[in-house]
Image 1 (cartoon, rainbow, N blue to C red):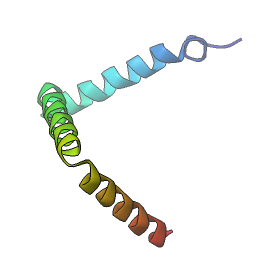
Image 2: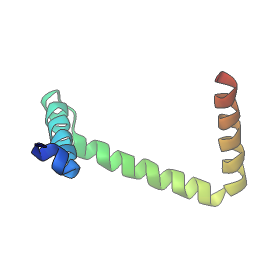
Image 3: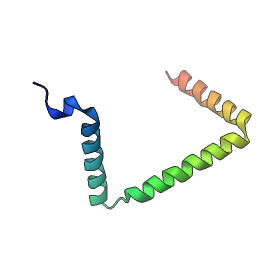
Length: 71
């Protein structure tokens, strides 16, 4: 018979996320500050891509080319 975690994968993910957050807080990492900074970074990237779409495509193509050369 299947256990509860295989029946509802969302519960397992939530438990894992809670455990990771607890461990990070135990070593002094403030996860709320990390989430705020990640949101700030996301807004900054979105604004930059919106203001310079062609340059963003060129940078993405160059990074993809470099990644392809390493493989």
